[in-house]
Image (tube, rainbow, N blue to C red; front, top):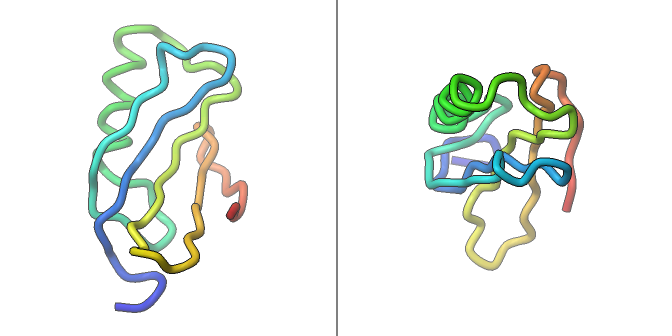
Length: 85
């Protein structure tokens, strides 16, 4: 499938300043879009807690099975923040 194809992975929501938003789960992920599971959880938490913290990261990491892994992450506002190792 290549680097940008769909693969099993883990989505996450992470905030350093408000840990009640921190959660993760399994998904099929790839390309440059946020997994549907992460989007659904974000909507659920917005209903429960209101506006998300400014430092909230929504992202995913593919399962690479002992291959160098990269994480693509998005800000809650939908902007592309880049790659990390």
